[in-house]
Length: 91
Image 1: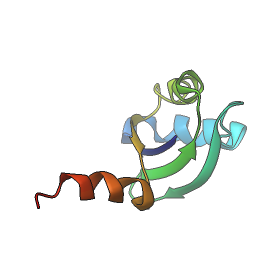
Image 2 (image 1 turned 135 degrees about the horizontal axis):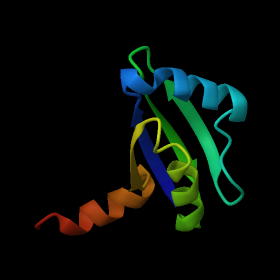
Image 3 (image 1 turned 180 degrees about the vertical axis):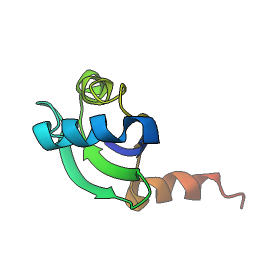
């Protein structure tokens, strides 16, 4: 399953978040594959990751919850969403 993760670093946590990122690289735990990560210039960013282990995802984001606000949303790709949406169209 793929996940979209969005974070916002409060100004009160920016130094701690930078330090933690430089020390760890933000590397996900075993069981989570990060497909990409993007950092905005406003203290916000997002990542796309993949995992079949919700507990591994939880562990990864729990490690960061003390320095940033994080929202994690399971997602599907167009190829998966299309047939579902097509079945909902009234004929």
